[in-house]
Image (cartoon, rainbow, N blue to C red; front, side, top):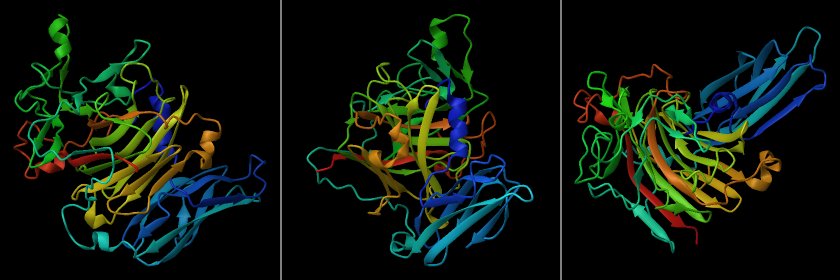
Length: 437
């Protein structure tokens, strides 16, 4: 979930044009001649998968008029593009790409390899509701929230309210920097339509059947009156879209030497932008700045993702030169993130971050400061304290713009019109934070 700033346009450009993943190699002839074709990158989102999983190839070239696939895929390709392929055979796949320039000019080639095995197919071979890892108290510093009480615990969580925030320079940033449509409701009278003071919950956030639920609502008949207008006569802000956003800032602080696991299920649709992510302690108070002090997105699901894909990302850099590194990870299509619970585990050490899915002991994404060329020139901000954020945005840059798909949205607090209410909700089964001993 990218933070709203005046640099949001450049961020989203990077998001959709820069690929994650490793295992790529590139060669070209005489790259110093600008008229010759060059493959800027040819990447795969996952270099080790199990049978039945999808991989996504992405590439970008310059000075090319055509590209052609080779190896374990074929056909003429656009000079820049992405393509998802399901791999059903146990083998090492090789995907190559050759891009040609004008007649008489040299070509550029690049290739990636993907290893497909059956090592972990037993994880998903059984059809069940949840594939999450099982919480285990095996550390000296341990916190587990399983949402087995209907009261939303304010000792751990704080609501964040509104449709934006004030930047350190005093500028109001509406839409949270991403042109998002929702107003985040909160606890308290007038801060939501249906505040339950007994449980500290709202129509957009509540606990049900042992799950924390964030429920975006689209209601264009009974608009939500912006609480700001109560003390500001002449103000008439009203909102069709409402949702919820919570943080653990100054309540549950997460530091290097920690392991964080969240068991979740994404809402079903491209109008939603669910995210489980982190910002540095002190950011809310204006003591830390974005992107310099970092952002860590454990998982998020956006309009460019398939139902069986989710994304992990780190953001860093300087104002005017924001940078990111991300990885899109997939599961077999029959156990996608809309229909089944999955868990992400972030193992965080000094100068190193790893992400694991479900019960896998092999990380799908690893970032090591000294082995990542971006940090030769950029500050590594991930050795400081962070806090957790969970929210579901609506529309905006990453979820359908001003016209998100509203098919699965609830239109009232009880979601009475949806035969499957969970299609329109982010569900959190548990949150676990522990020290790495």
